[in-house]
Length: 394
Image (cartoon, rainbow, N blue to C red):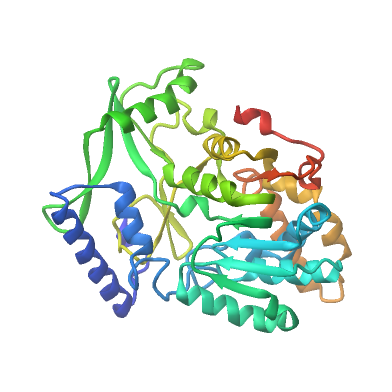
């Protein structure tokens, strides 16, 4: 697999080796085994060395993947339309988590300002110092007049009023892996491989985790066939926990999340027997999370039923669930595309191609979902006006 991927430059390879040594030490201290969630946390977030903690470029053509806000400003304009609607009933503030390159923040600020709805505050919760600087630089170029309204937070505020936005944040939260075999539940963790590097290692799951796995998957399997042979998948405990924490602190407002994933009935379908774990490196997707730790993104799809349950248990009301394509269409993406000036034919064609990627079922349109929750917010979100699939989350 590694032969098919471009080799990292020497300085990056050295960073990866240093991180691998740190992970190996953690495994040794733990007695030779750590849960995959611990490995994923170290690979992505270890200070100075982890994928999101180091200074390498992650987003865009020079990085490892492209997100919707970077494909086209049309995405941010549609999200701004939804935020502007909510500003009619909540405080005009935005809290964005994991703002990436800053492209979504820049477009939201610019578009809301053009609508006469510029937020009084725009707070970005960002753990990466290098990404903070990149976001600050982009915002200073794109919306210099609004930069004074932007602040960066190290941690979530104890009380939130306004709109919470997060694009492709949940998929990067560490997950626990399990293997179901002949009715027994094993937790899949990580050990040091005899020849160097790391390897998956399974051990019997503790009672709490085994019970969680059984409750999660058996309801789905009762409604269909039971899988034959080994069944491997993930439990996104941290994603659900994060949603619960944000929901508890949302005193009045809405939460709008975009990510790729499925309702539980699809996520744990008996035929989806190898899970959803995947890695992104230089715009290539592969399945080896142990290749060059710290130099590649590691993700898992989102169980939106778990996310909805966490929000509901924290007191939020569901405001909508749909494909990204339908959300963007309901927020006027095609009208916005048609209104773009056509003097520069090449630029218009580029935007049309980007819109196709955002909407196409073969690209981001169906796999990516939009989900919204709120407290003391009317259930009339325009992004879910023509089709709302929240019933499939039950």
